Image (tube, rainbow, N blue to C red; front, side, top):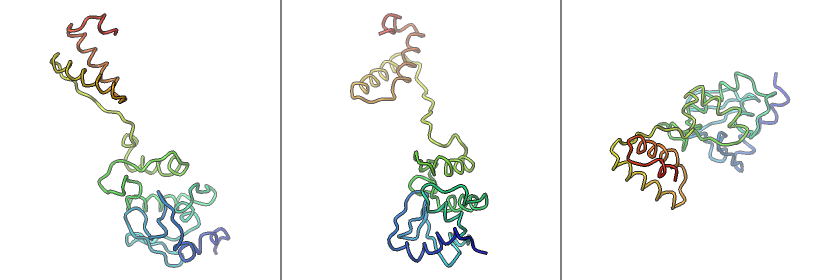
Length: 185
């Protein structure tokens, strides 16, 4: 039994393939690629990397819609979609297999569907948070040189140096190479 909703997607390969240009987490319908891999359509079957998936209304919804309707796709469709994204590197920056950086966005599809898949596969810590540990030297002269460089960076309107500059100032103060009055400046 075919659902009426299925007719919404049934003719996509034959009708939309020539003119559609859907991107990011979707099929590049004009070139028949998803991620870095070719995708083939044959009736109700979608083939990706030699694996066949039944082209259900839910899988089509996830593949091509910017805001997939939760009432159309199932858990099985979501599992198939996650597998397709993983196999084709479609979630990875530049579709590069070695990349540990996700193709992220502020869009609905990324936030509600893609990000949870990414976090399940690669863990929440791998989604860019900008956190890093900076090891600062203990030599006061090296600290002063680094602080001068960071302050020059500030005059060039660069941002993101404040935490490291404060850590260096704290260390110089702790080593009694700077007065509290200079520290407050």
